[in-house]
Length: 305
Image 1 (cartoon, rainbow, N blue to C red):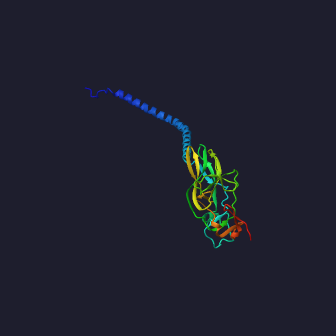
Image 2: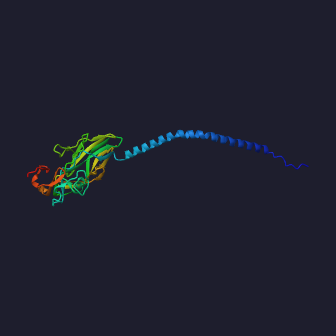
Image 3: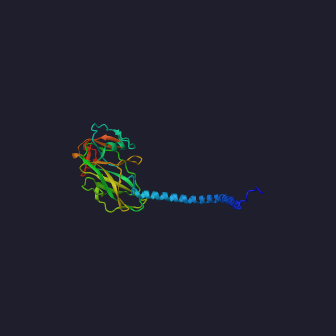
């Protein structure tokens, strides 16, 4: 009697399946190895597309950021040469007589530009020159100047000062002059008259396309009081109105260091305890008899001794 196990009826089918699976695995490995170079080539070709998409996204983000921001960028101008005369509350001791004035310094502790801004107040008018650069894609309209946080008191007395002249920067393009009487019930932006006083109300608007830059010289006047205030440009862009801050004081590097303007009217009867005038870059005490006042309370030094 035979002792061999019975024949496996599924043997041939299993063997056929294993052979097929082995063949499939070998074919898959060959396909994968052959596909790697093709994949690398595809990825390399995709890199410029991804980079271009990234650049487009960044440009779109930057464009949207500009559109969402203020319509103009304000920087320091060069065409305003500063107040001609200043007033200080103290210094009746005449301690600055014959003292040099350092026109290249911003040190608030010695006679200099920084000293003026820290301790003295412009007489009759103050101002600033600003460069206005249009940022928005659509046309920007500069409509005028507004003031806020206005606080006024009696005119300052004490010491009258004429520092050395600073001159102007000699701008190539003629700046747009604006003038405001800040004591008016409703201060209106005006043209600067030939007499260096506020003239007729400014008519029209200044249009700036994206990338255009225009310099503005803005002057503020008082007649009877001493005032402190802030100011802003009134800008229209894309159907919206913006109030863009105007810095009052810049440092030597063109950085805004204060947004508060100060100005004082002349003292009653022009009564000052001390009078300084500049001789070159040296301050000298002079008597009141050497100061002549015009009908608008503007002083002129006319030595009589």
